[in-house]
Length: 300
Image (cartoon, rainbow, N blue to C red; front, side):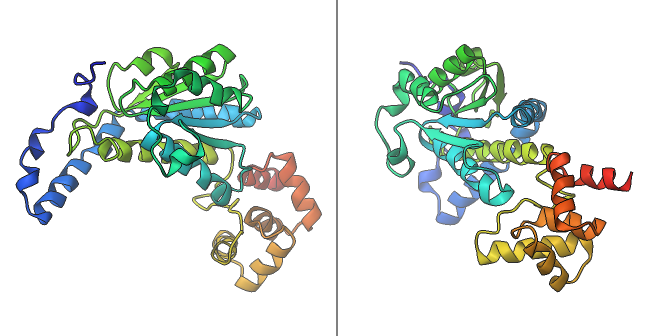
């Protein structure tokens, strides 16, 4: 297997002497390289937006967003997926992250797991993948067999398949229907793709999940109105969101929230329309949970 042609395996001319540098010089070099990541992502914003549109369409049709990858890439997908329920009140099965090697691979490297192409397929089979789902396979190198297997199975089922890679003209791009290639160049330490490539992947995943949630009405203005009030901090955040959105007092926000199981969206609509709690819930359901749309219908 030859990998030295991959962008992610190239030596970085800016860090050839990094082992002779002081700690300050080392972290400055790392910081300088990190600053190139947003510029690389800017070049692929249209591709990211296109994938977002596929995810929004899938969500509206009852489909799921499934991230799959090995090592750092898989862990980043799991991280992004796990943040969606508390932030946007989504069911845990709506955005899913899977990693080569299973649960133990989240915190311990499972040697050889990324080379198992069949496992990439089987892990999606175990999720009962359907044509309504979107599969985003993540791999900095763009050549991981596990991720390629997942993409091939997604294509076979008729699901949307997308690759998030950090190499140009990758093997995964030849399999996926859509490719986001955030080419960040050689790493500070050759081949350590948890660094710039991992940062790029994290930023892109943030964009995909956040923009998709905005697309299905989980955000009102820039407020996370479907936040799940599962701890004291989030209960207070919900109250603050209601106050920000309506201009009401904290006491009024708390009372309105009590009618909607602590969820901000219903409380906001109730306060802005002065409808009863049951009428508020009906109006929201009629508008598929889209708060701004519900408000427009109320105002006629």
